Image (cartoon, rainbow, N blue to C red; front, side):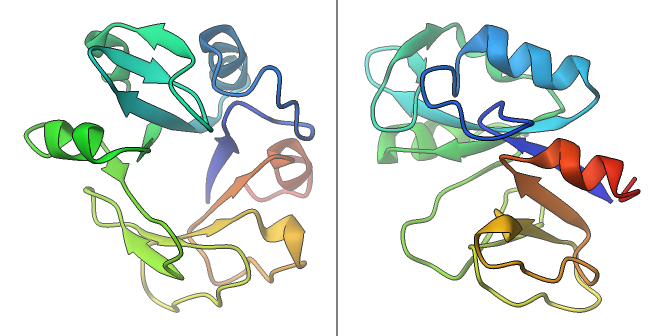
Length: 147
C-alpha cells in the first residue's frame, strides 16, 4: 500500500505549511511519498492556490513526489521528463505519467488497477481495493496497519 502525504500533511491540514519544502521534507522523513502542487511561471514554484515557494527544477527529481501540475506551463514542461506528474480539474479520475489512477475524493476504487484513493477521509471511502492512499491524515492510515 502506497502512503502519500497530501501537500506534506500527515496529521491534518496545516494550510500555512502546505507545499513548503521543509514541511514536505518532514513528511518524507516519516517515510511517506508526498503529493506536491507545482507551478511554472518564469521558474518553478510550489503552492496550492498560486506559485508561493520558489524551488529549483532539480528539486522535483525525487522518486517520492507525486507532482500535481497546477498550470498548463508546468504540465507541458514536465511532459518531456520521467517524473511522476498529473493534472486534473473536476475529473473523477486522472492518470499519472507513471500509469497510476488518481481517484478524486468520493470516487470508487478500480479493482485490479494501480489506483490511489485521494482524501478518503472526506467521505469515509473504503480504501481496501486501492493500491494507495493520499491523505492529510496519512499517519492515521499508517497506524491502521496499511503498510
